[in-house]
Amino acid sequence: MSKSLFSIEYPLDNVSLTVLWNSIGTPLGLSEWFADGVTVNENEYTFSWEKYEQTAFLLQTKQNQFIRFQWEEDAGTDYYFELLINVVPITGDIILIVNDFAGKDEQEDAILLWNKQIAELRRKTGM
Image (cartoon, rainbow, N blue to C red; front, side):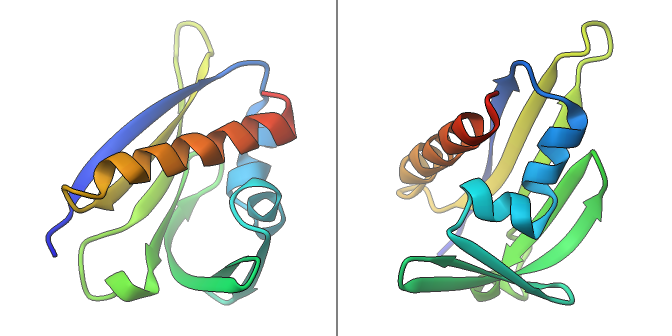
């Protein structure tokens, strides 16, 4: 199945760059809002939700800027998901950008899932 890239921007209020990075760029932070648990073995991250596990590979990261993963089932493709921090130069406002891939008939569900996850991130961190 062919997938297309989509991006969602989430303006975040009352958050420091350090708190945001710790929430998206560390296993402990990810386990607070993205998954119930996160285990790491080198560049292999295993995310768990109740009785379900999914493995992703850390492709690239730059502290306080972005983290990019690829799900195990997407190995050998150009598909990934990424959490990118954009600090607006003039205002200092912080925007979290989610870049992800989904099939045409799955994109709406993927956006709803990201909206739910980011709402949980905001709730857990007070953003």
